[in-house]
Image (tube, rainbow, N blue to C red):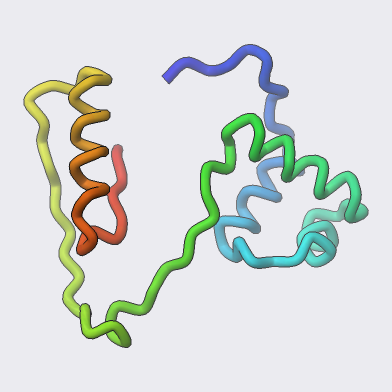
Length: 107
Protein backbone atom coordinates (compact mmCIF):
# COMPACT_ATOMS: atom_id res chain seq x y z
CA UNK A 1 0.00 0.00 0.00
CA UNK A 2 1.40 3.38 -0.97
CA UNK A 3 1.62 6.09 1.61
CA UNK A 4 -0.17 9.27 0.66
CA UNK A 5 2.37 12.07 0.57
CA UNK A 6 -0.33 14.62 1.45
CA UNK A 7 -0.85 13.07 4.86
CA UNK A 8 0.66 14.82 7.82
CA UNK A 9 3.11 12.49 9.62
CA UNK A 10 1.81 11.07 12.88
CA UNK A 11 3.25 12.66 15.98
CA UNK A 12 3.25 11.27 19.52
CA UNK A 13 -0.16 12.74 20.35
CA UNK A 14 -1.72 11.24 17.20
CA UNK A 15 -0.31 7.85 18.18
CA UNK A 16 -1.65 8.23 21.74
CA UNK A 17 -5.10 9.08 20.34
CA UNK A 18 -5.02 5.96 18.16
CA UNK A 19 -3.90 3.78 21.08
CA UNK A 20 -6.69 5.05 23.35
CA UNK A 21 -9.33 4.64 20.63
CA UNK A 22 -8.17 1.07 19.97
CA UNK A 23 -8.89 0.23 23.60
CA UNK A 24 -12.17 2.16 23.82
CA UNK A 25 -13.74 3.53 20.63
CA UNK A 26 -16.70 4.83 22.66
CA UNK A 27 -14.61 7.17 24.82
CA UNK A 28 -15.99 10.69 24.86
CA UNK A 29 -13.94 13.38 23.20
CA UNK A 30 -13.56 15.16 26.55
CA UNK A 31 -12.14 12.02 28.18
CA UNK A 32 -9.94 11.29 25.16
CA UNK A 33 -8.59 14.84 25.23
CA UNK A 34 -7.84 14.47 28.93
CA UNK A 35 -6.02 11.15 28.35
CA UNK A 36 -3.78 12.64 25.64
CA UNK A 37 -3.31 16.00 27.40
CA UNK A 38 -5.12 18.21 24.88
CA UNK A 39 -8.12 20.46 25.13
CA UNK A 40 -11.26 19.00 23.52
CA UNK A 41 -11.37 21.10 20.33
CA UNK A 42 -7.84 20.29 19.07
CA UNK A 43 -8.36 16.67 20.08
CA UNK A 44 -11.55 16.41 18.01
CA UNK A 45 -9.79 18.10 15.07
CA UNK A 46 -7.02 15.48 15.25
CA UNK A 47 -9.53 12.60 15.39
CA UNK A 48 -11.38 14.02 12.36
CA UNK A 49 -8.05 14.34 10.48
CA UNK A 50 -7.05 10.78 11.40
CA UNK A 51 -10.42 9.61 10.07
CA UNK A 52 -10.24 11.61 6.85
CA UNK A 53 -6.66 10.49 6.15
CA UNK A 54 -7.64 6.85 6.62
CA UNK A 55 -5.71 6.07 9.81
CA UNK A 56 -9.04 5.32 11.47
CA UNK A 57 -11.04 3.09 9.15
CA UNK A 58 -13.96 1.96 11.27
CA UNK A 59 -15.46 1.96 14.72
CA UNK A 60 -16.66 -1.57 15.49
CA UNK A 61 -18.47 -3.47 18.18
CA UNK A 62 -17.03 -6.77 19.36
CA UNK A 63 -19.86 -9.08 20.36
CA UNK A 64 -19.76 -11.69 23.10
CA UNK A 65 -20.02 -14.99 21.21
CA UNK A 66 -21.01 -16.92 24.36
CA UNK A 67 -24.12 -14.83 24.84
CA UNK A 68 -24.98 -15.34 21.17
CA UNK A 69 -24.63 -19.13 21.40
CA UNK A 70 -21.62 -18.92 19.15
CA UNK A 71 -19.04 -19.84 21.76
CA UNK A 72 -16.59 -21.64 19.47
CA UNK A 73 -13.64 -19.51 18.50
CA UNK A 74 -11.51 -20.75 15.61
CA UNK A 75 -8.33 -19.26 14.24
CA UNK A 76 -7.38 -20.19 10.70
CA UNK A 77 -4.39 -19.43 8.57
CA UNK A 78 -5.19 -19.07 4.88
CA UNK A 79 -2.51 -19.19 2.22
CA UNK A 80 -3.37 -17.70 -1.14
CA UNK A 81 -1.69 -18.79 -4.36
CA UNK A 82 -1.27 -15.15 -5.31
CA UNK A 83 -1.17 -11.91 -3.36
CA UNK A 84 -2.02 -9.60 -6.23
CA UNK A 85 -4.38 -6.78 -5.31
CA UNK A 86 -7.13 -8.40 -7.40
CA UNK A 87 -6.86 -11.72 -5.55
CA UNK A 88 -6.74 -10.02 -2.16
CA UNK A 89 -9.80 -7.92 -3.01
CA UNK A 90 -11.68 -11.02 -4.19
CA UNK A 91 -10.77 -12.87 -0.99
CA UNK A 92 -11.86 -9.88 1.10
CA UNK A 93 -15.22 -9.71 -0.68
CA UNK A 94 -15.76 -13.46 -0.24
CA UNK A 95 -14.96 -13.34 3.48
CA UNK A 96 -17.42 -10.51 4.02
CA UNK A 97 -20.29 -12.64 2.69
CA UNK A 98 -19.91 -15.22 5.48
CA UNK A 99 -21.73 -13.94 8.59
CA UNK A 100 -20.01 -16.46 10.89
CA UNK A 101 -16.66 -14.78 10.25
CA UNK A 102 -16.44 -12.06 12.86
CA UNK A 103 -12.91 -10.86 12.17
CA UNK A 104 -10.27 -11.30 9.50
CA UNK A 105 -6.74 -9.94 9.75
CA UNK A 106 -3.86 -9.87 7.32
CA UNK A 107 -0.23 -10.06 8.26
